[in-house]
Length: 285
Ligand SMILES: NC(=O)c1ccc[n+]([C@@H]2O[C@H](COP(=O)([O-])OP(=O)(O)OC[C@H]3O[C@@H](n4cnc5c(N)ncnc54)[C@H](O)[C@@H]3O)[C@@H](O)[C@H]2O)c1
Image (cartoon, rainbow, N blue to C red; front, side, top):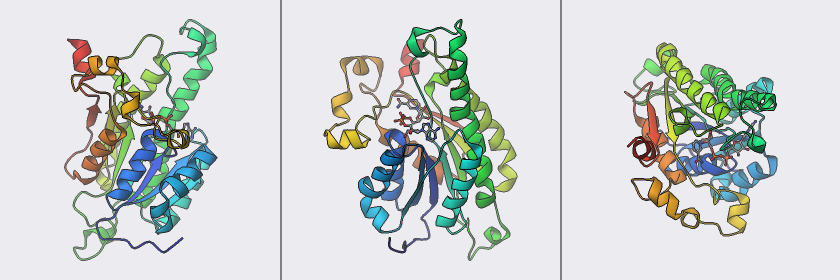
């Protein structure tokens, strides 16, 4: 790997769950925007493919790092964030807590009356809510304001917007389908976490916001999708056109655009940006 040429506007960004789906696209769009990216994911093969093949040209330039990490293991999180910080020479600018698990309903058509759903509930909470807390906690020492930042000439975070944390939530925090308590509650919990962090981390110079995707088609953002020639267009159905006032389902780029906005939005803190093509509004009406 070559030594990365880093411009003064380039930021060091960690993306969790970045081997496929929205996370893979986030990494790519961040790299296209001139940033450096460190990707964490539990799927070893998919992760290696994403970092070294899908993002090959950036990887060869030393702009992509990656590590296998189980977001349900706090010790793993701590050691992999340390590895990412080393890759970034001790300075993390942005953390995107994207990794998560989702399902339209409890397995085997159970309802919450069934005690069998308890383990799934715990998995949702640990992956979608506890992990963003633990990831953020591990990153803070490498993100927070330093004396050198006050200096106008040099300093790790001398840019206007400063460091930030973005949680990838879900529109399901606001509108659940039946039998989706685990997912909906974990995503609503992220809203509370984001709001609390936006207040507590202010003195450290770290902004915290949340991007809540609606229905985003992601099957093309994977090794299998690449090999099978999958496209975003091929995943849009008549129902997607009917369900969205924007006449389409979401693209991973829609989420990347919102994140890139937040990364540069120095006066935006504690905000939930719902990116759902107006689907929630349509249902309400
Ligand atoms: N796609 C959508 O329509 C949609 C809608 C609302 C919210 N979201 C949210 O966006 C985020 C990304 O979703 P996606 O659709 O790309 O899903 P995805 O399943 O394609 O990607 C999620 C990634 O997280 C990783 N992951 C899961 N558990 C992990 C663990 N324990 N440790 C490490 N990595 C783990 C997976 O390996 C995968 O690469 C999630 O937080 C999801 O809840 C997605």
